[in-house]
Length: 205
Image (cartoon, rainbow, N blue to C red; front, top):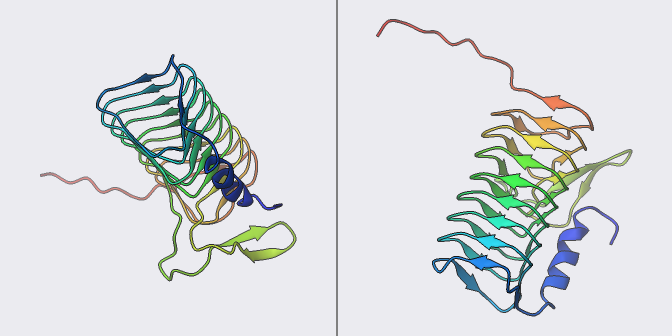
């Protein structure tokens, strides 16, 4: 294992081997649904109403899983992270102290201290169903060996509302993907990607 997306396989490997554990201090709403034996819910976690957690899954201490969320297919949520209302997280690793709101995160790796604005989507599948290719520094495009791979986001990144990050895209540390941006190429560290303003014509009704 030496490539960033190998972390998804390692995560799956370890989650499949953990037992079911729900800390006594965790608060799980009666309307929440936990499915599967390989679910770990740490100390002081809060899971709100009408959320479904489908194991294998790991939720670190102090994390909050909001209403109407879906966590599934080998997902890890780091300590102190908040998965906000109506977010879906699938086969992903999300670091510590991250925030999402009405987001879709699929087959992705999100570093620590990241914030995904409302409606953010990490696309993870090509229309042609071919394997996802990832740009490696000095090596050009590399076949990831999988048809499903979302984004690889470093620490301290943010996205604006309705941002879309295309399959296999990397976002460097301390970078921002602006609202409405469709990110189709890698974003280097300490950069901001913004959508150019289009002319809006306003007429009498």
